[in-house]
Each structure stands twice: as C-alpha cells, then as structure tokens.
Length: 256
Length: 370
Image 1 (spheres, helix red, strand yellow):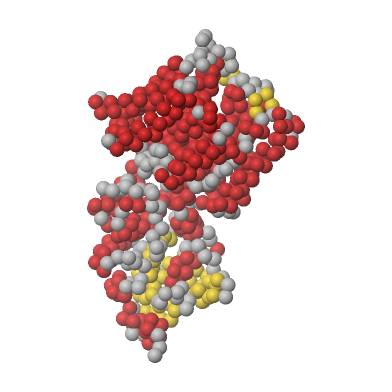
Image 2 (cartoon, rainbow over the protein chains, first blue to last red; image 1 turned 90 degrees about the horizontal axis):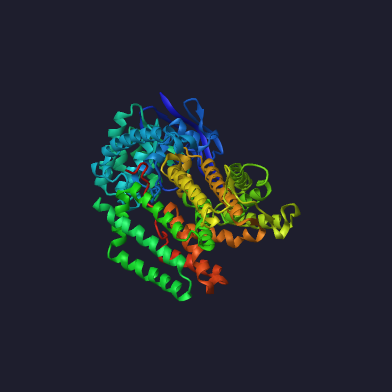
C-alpha cells in the first residue's frame, strides 16, 4: 500500500530549481534510501514534505492529505517526523524535554490543565517518562540515567540518538532521516541503524526514508533506492541495480 | 534535620545582611556592606559554602520557603514603623511580580519586551481611573487584563519580526504609551492623576495598624501577590506549556516540525507576562498614591530588563534577588542617585561579561521536584 505519493513535485528558489518534477512513492513499511550528490535536492525533498518549504508545483499525497497545502504542524500531526542533518536539539534543555518536544501531539497543552490540574499532569508525566525511558533504553542504557541532564553535555552519538527518539516517540507513520551517520564512526552508525530497525519492529508499518552518503548503510538497511541529481530522479530500484546504473555513476564521479 | 542547617544559616545570613543594609544610614556603612557582599560571596563560593547551602535548600524546599517567609516577616517587624524601608520592601515585591511576567516573556518564550514600564503604567492608570468606582480586587484584575489586551495590539508586529526588530517595536510602544498619557488631558497630562489607596475587602491599606507604618500593609499585600505570581510562574515552567515556551525560544523550525504552534505560545507568554505587569502596576499606583507619565519612561523599562538579566534569565528566585539589588542599591547610595541609570548600565554590562547566566542561573526543568 502506498503511504506517500509525490507526483511532479517541484521547488524553485528564484531561478534555481531545487526539486524538478519529482515522482516518488513510499510504500507502507518500506525503507527507502535517498541518495545523490550534494545539492541534488534530497534535503529539499524532506523540507517540502514536512512543510518547511512551499512547493512551487506538483503534489504530495499522504493518505487522504495533500501535504503541499498544509503547515508543518499539521503534517506532524498526520504522522510524519524527521531528524535534521545538523542536529537541531534544544541544547540547554534536558534529554527528556527534548524527547517530549517530539511528543507534542500526544500531550495536553491547555493552560488550565497545566497550571491547576497538577495531579492529572503528574499522571501524564509519569506515563510519558516511562515511555521515554523505554524508547531511550533501546538505544542506550546509559542514556536512561541521564534523562534529566542538559543535552549540551552529551556526546555526538547520544545527541543523534536523542534526535531519533524525538522523532520516534509520537509513533509516526513515516520517519525521515537526514544523514544519520554524519559526524559518527562506522561502528557508531551501524549500532544506531540496528537500534532504529529494532524500534521499527515494534512500530508496525513504520516507513522510513533515509538520506545517506555512506553507501554501506544504504545497502544494508534500504529495500529500495532513489537517486537524485539536480533535483531530478535519475534512477530507482534495488541498491545493487542503481549502483550499477551508468547515469548514477556519472552523477557521482563525473564524466571524463 | 541536620541537612537543613546550611540552608537555614544562609537564609539567616541574607536576612541579617538585608537588615543591616536597610538600616545603614551613612554612605561609609552602605559602601562597606556592598564591598562585603562583592568580596565575600565569591569567597564563600570558593569554599563551597554556597553550593552546600543550595543543596541543603533543595533537600528541604518547604522548610526553605517557610524560613524565607519568616525572615521577611522578621525584617518587616524590625522596620515596622519606618515608612521608607517598608516602601522599599513593598516596591521590591511588586517589581518582582512584574518582572516575573517579563521572565515568562523573555526568559521562557524569548519574546523581548522593552516596554515593561508601559504595561505597569496601564495598570497604574487603571487604578487612577477606576479606583473610586469599584472593588479594588477587580481593579487589580482589570489592570492586568487591560495590559494584556493592549499587549495584544503589539503581538501582530512582534510575531512578524525577530530579534532586534521585535525589540524595537516594544521600545517604540513604550515611548508611544508615555507620549499618549502625557498629552492626554483626561488622564491628567504631564501632572498625572491621584490614585486612591488600596482597600481590599474592607481592609484599608492606607490606615496604619498600631505603630506599624501603613506601608507594612502594602508589604503584606505585595507578599501575597508575589507569592501567587511565584507559584503560577513556577507551575507554568514545570509543565508542558513551559516546555513549549522553551522550545519556541530555542528553535522555531524544530518547533514547527514537531507541531508546536510558535505564534500561539508567543502570544500566551506575552499576554501572561503583561497581565502580571498590569496587576503589579495597579497595586503600585495605589501604594504611591499617584501616577504620572514620568514614572513610566523607557529608562524604567530598562530597569525591569536589567532585573531579569541580573537575576538569571528564567529563574524566579533570581528575579526577587535582583529586584532587591536594583531597586534598593541606588536609594541607599545617595551619591549614585543622579547616576542610577549609569549604575544599571554598568551592572548589565558586567553581568553579561562576567556571569551571563545571571546571579542565580536557571536549572534544568524538574516537573515535580520532591
């Protein structure tokens, strides 16, 4: 079953065409690898899907919803979350606070509730604390004990874990990972990806789109790949198939 | 019980210091006390005594709060017949209320407000106009509501700008407010208006009880208001709402991606904060007995901003401490009276350079501390 279907998706910045008539579908439960040289439009694709950029043309259907017409808040509410290439955590806040930012959809935000129904708030807090402990525990036992430490004091890999937990805590239907391996060693990346796959098993039907430059990561986790170049899709299919594609090789290595 | 001792000693020491400071008459005494604090506190810090005291207060929060109230009441008792000292204490308490409001705006949501004095003024003029016509509890509430309402006029341009530009808008509003009341004859023009003393449920705060200064009544009232403000701001911070406000301050893009409505929370923080400033302004005007445009200048707004910066952005206790320092110090150092704005400027620059996190830095959120 198709979860996300983009047709002719286009993003222009003045004269620059960042995304040029992209047709791309993501099936439910699928892991799609999105690859391509720098500036080929991969992150732009995430930004337009999550409502940060306006589409200049084309459609992006997510179930019944037309994403290009929605503000980011609604898109999150529909079940799409993401991580950022350069970590966008709230550094002075605790690990738990950062993860709860991702849980916004499932919390009560009324002023009266938060100020005066303190017992109900406490119950909600306990429940979410339990949930956060469990999720963080999948990634790192040690991090569970630091749930109330500010993120600023944590290592790169822990920050990335927190970012992924923030994206997963609200149990989304589609997770967009923007270069999870950036700034980490091969070993750390491997560990992180294994943990993500572990969480995916619990969240039945979660689809993932992953942007990655580490080809061994893509090869290992993705079921299907799409390759972008200058905002266009130049190849699509299993990793082995696209890796052998002549146009893909040219895009990455240039012509001689 | 033993663990409570360092905390109690600290509170007693602060109370004793406040007593001597309020009591000091000669400039030599005052300067001596300032020097004692400036030199003594870092030394105490070096020997780990401040950390010990704060850990002890953390372990006994309720006890600490009772001790602080007792200490404050003891000071009230000691200065009960002195108008000036009591006026100072009450002013500090009411400014604490207003600056707690500013803390919600700037410290939590990151919405700058350089028009704090204007919102105090809205409350003050509300008292002047309505004070003779309705119960004063209502006047306080209306003062707060009007400040919040007037603030909502500013919200639109503030939401559409960021950083320096949003700051400039509030600066402009503050000046606008002052000019408006200055030329408005119905509001008394430059001379301002008289304000009736406060009367709460038949308790006339302007009539002294026994040998007490009538300002003592205002101290008690201020204590009540600041306690309410304190509890509300603390609860706000320790809730999902507080988390949303922090998130809005730190990264608006990340907020949007996780469903947080940036505009909604900025509006809430701004309105909430202005309400506090309005209530404090209404009470303050009833205490001093008059309002005039000159009490609500840009300089007065800067005082409020310097209080929240000095105290430690986002820390409620810091606000109370900084309000005490910023308001009382220039009154006591007569040599500084003329140069008080210079003092504030130096204080803010010094704090931003030496200790940008403020005197009492805010700590990571604990939703339900034991």
